[in-house]
Image (cartoon, rainbow, N blue to C red; front, side, top):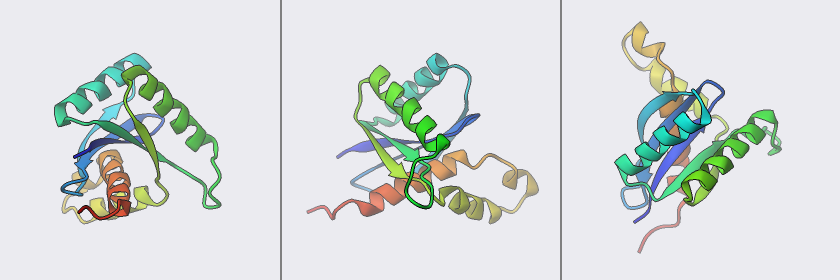
Length: 139
């Protein structure tokens, strides 16, 4: 069984989610407010340890024509640095439209306060769920 920690890497926040290939169900964990790379990397390492993650999965915000714009390049660079620091396997997952999915989920919440919360962890879960749904069936 492989357990993944998924990242929705933004300029100000990083959404975290976890899931594994046995249950094939992603769950949002939390949102990290970015501080410094060292603090961020330490927090992500702790999250990996907390959930027993074997691998990282980073969302890659590709353009609709499949090209990598500035945000995708920035996310790739950040994730690659993190992979080297933590010495763990890293995969990327197209994250187009996951923020839309996260916003749709949040819009179903009853209170205004809940709807104003950052959707980054939910977006990370949507990224991971998309990845898990693409895995071949287990025997």
